[in-house]
Image (tube, rainbow, N blue to C red):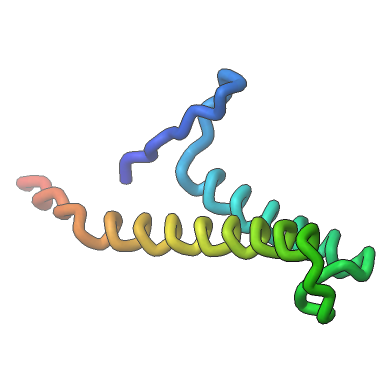
Length: 86
């Protein structure tokens, strides 16, 4: 399988798998910060700051899941190479 790389402005290229994990991880971190400090939509706090933080967290989680789904779809549609001749 060919690995695509994603450039991160800082000069380091991330593989598609690393980008997926990174998106989901930071989404969970953003939501966990809100839960830890008690300012989360999931705890009933509907302030603007809580909505933005939790919204960003959910966005990054969904973005990671969509990337994962696309990667699986792309891997399933790649043609298999013919078997070597013996």
